[in-house]
Amino acid sequence: MATGLAAGGAAAIGTGMAMAAPLIGSIKAAQDYQSVMTDIGQKADLSRAASEQLGRNLLVSARAANQMPADLQAGVDALAGLGAKVPDAVAMMKPIGRAATAYKAEISDLSAAAFAATDNLKVPVAQTGKIIDVMASAGKAGAFEIKDMAQYFPALTAAYQGLGQTGVGAVADLAAGLQIARKGAGDAASAGTNLANILQKIASPATNKAFEKMGVDLPAALKKAYAEGKTPLEAIAELTNKTLKGDLSKLGYLFEDAQVQQGLRPLIQNMEEFRKIRAEAAKAGGTTDRDFADRMKDSAEQSKQLKINATTLAITLGSQLLPTINAIVTRANAFATWIGDVANRYPNLTKAVAIGAAAFAGLFFVLGGGAIVIAGLVAPFSALAFAAGALGIGMLPVVGIALAVVAGIVAIGAAAYLIYANWGAIGGWFAGLWQGIKGTFAGAVDWFASLPTRFAQIGRDMISGLIRGIFGMFGSLKSTIVGVASSAAGWFKAKLGIHSPSRVFAGFGGNIVDGLTNGIAAQEGEPVKRMVRLSSRLTSAIVTGSAIPALAMGGTGAGSAGVASARAGNAAPRSYTIHINQQPGQDAQALARAVADELDRRERETAARGRSSFADTPDYETV
Image (cartoon, rainbow, N blue to C red):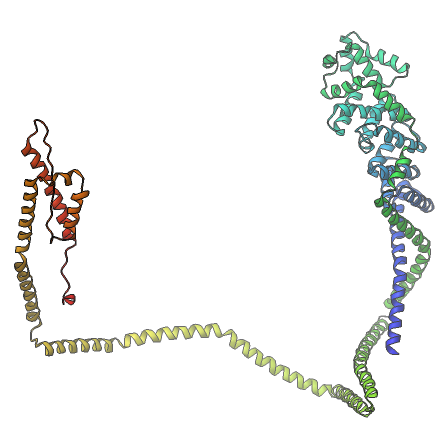
């Protein structure tokens, strides 16, 4: 039952919050909308009733234009800043907003363009829709779109007004002129600048002098053209072409400004198209509405429409609730003011009430926590009771467990009461305990704080002890070394029978030298024998003439074999085969001497390589 009640209460609260959320959102949206309308009304010095009526009219325009109310408020504020009357600005928002939706243009740009037409060209505010249609129709005729025109219309309309032009026809003339100027420019910005320069130069003194040099009285010619119903753009284009006799290469004689030339040239060349675009734009009607209806078929605009409808509905409902909300808030403010006054007059009573409220808050906090604990205990008992009933074991064990838990709770409560009743003594005991803990902790902290100093001293003591120990044992080390040396000397003397070490080692040196001398004497005949054998073989080779091929082949073939044999060892005799081909007039003895010298050189090299490989066989390898 408790769970059910809690769930029902939570569901009711959730339902109330869900129902209140849109109402709260509506009230907030209405308050924000009302605040902006108050700002607008204050700028125009309007009454609150007039501001609220304009706000309702603007909500209707927002739904009709598929624009957010806040965006239309921004447009009204921009127009009011330019000098438009607020009621006129609100009336202009519907066609401006629909054009912004249809052509994806900025409301601020279209608002500035529409105001420029009404303010500079004196087009009535009621014809704002017509202005938008004219611009839209001309924008469809080429690359200069309505969103581009919106940026340049304020400056162009001011210049055209200076030439005496007004009305919807002037709007059509400028819109068509921008479209033609775009043909001779790389982008919309250049086209707008070129057309603005043309309007500035039409009646300038420099232009009048240039035409006068060509024999034309420009002011009189323009006046005559205007009387015939021609506009300034149309008139200057025709007069320029007529003065130059169609030769546009001389355009610089009349207009030195390059931008004027870039604007006039396409206008002169496309005059018929200019007139056609202007005529169609002037009679345009419903263009924006048709394009708006087509745009509203887009899914994005339909989704946006749903959002706009919800917002306008919220503002409408919130506005209807605002009087009631204001009344409630007024009473609440009055009650709060009364409470504040009472609190100031009776500070002690206020303090008592605050303490009582705090006590009740704490009590409910404790009771709420206890309820949660009890609920947590009851749930398993209920589960046990259900299990006991299902298993047929009865409720006595469950009751026993419950009584034990209750007893535990009572014991905890009793303990809490005893603590409360004896808090003075317990508090004193805890205070003493705490002081002891703080003292112990402070001592520990001091001990830990002294650790760096303690460790530093320990390190110094260790190094000092090590140094003292090393220097203290130098005497023992010296005695030990001397003793070892004496023992070694005694052992050598005893084993070798040495009485005088110098005489013994002198004897060793003499024996070594004697052995070296005997060894050299025993082998001194070997080098002579080897030289004799080499000389005998060389003489034999020279006599037989066998050394020449080996010399001629540079150590290859038989000669190489002989050298290889010599390197392998001197056991096998070397043989050389020499063929001598004496040339006419050549001395045979001189040739033989050259060959002998070469062989001597080769033998010396072979002997040197052989000596590098000579080595005595170590004694330990002797068999």
